[in-house]
Amino acid sequence: MGDNNTNTALKSLSQGSGKTLVLLHGWGMNSAVFSEFLPFLTADLEVIRICLPGFGLNSDKLPEDYSLDTITALVNESVPEDSVVAGWSLGGLVAQQLALSYPDKIAGLITLASSPCFVSNGCWKGIEPEVLNGFQRQLARDYEKTLDRFLAIQAMGSASARQDVKTIRQQLGALPSPAEVALAAGLSLLETVDLRSMIGRINQPTLRLYGRLDSLVPTSSIDRIHELHPGADTVVMPHAAHAPFISHPQQTADILLNFINNLTRIDRYYS
Image 1 (cartoon, rainbow, N blue to C red):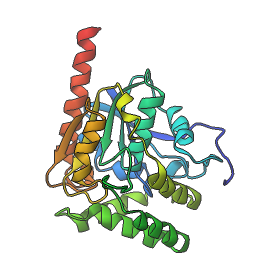
Image 2: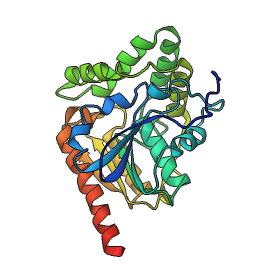
Image 3: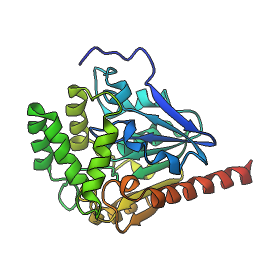
Image 4: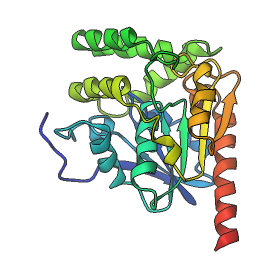
């Protein structure tokens, strides 16, 4: 797959100071998608943004086996000890796997509009398989149109949907375009990864943040996820869709900071 350029660690971007928060982006995106969200965090935190393998700053770093375990291991090399890791959408799958695979390193887990399993299956609600299949077929013909369609679905339901898509589109251009192989492999991860039987073993303090208007992680799945991971804090933002940090940056930042500050107070109490 590609050039197998994995000899060096993944590149990352760091701003701010304080407790370390690592941000992981979603499918088709890169770390620039968090650019306008950063000012709401960096007065209190050191924020490290890591582009997933094959995306953005790391578009040239493609493992031969683009599996969740492999890309999580690569991301882990760039995650400092005692970090809180927040993953959006596909990045949430990586964040959950980081918490499972490296429990002594990850101090806290945050998922943003994410799930342990993105695809509808029986009574489990998510993205319909034929929708992801359609993305795969379209991707082979036109990445730009596929991304535009995916962005439109993500923003669907948000009162600021048109502006949300415009904002994301503008931000993505700041970093290199993704590798086609990573795009196809990333869609396959959304289609095949199922962590439902594993998330109950996540012991780190966890915040799961959702948008009530999200069509990719529907509200009907939230109670099911909580049943599988009852120790997690669950917050549903009533007016947000799949990109709450874009449509409601201040509210999203307040929720994240409250969670992280509580972790810091607990650390101080027991130290």
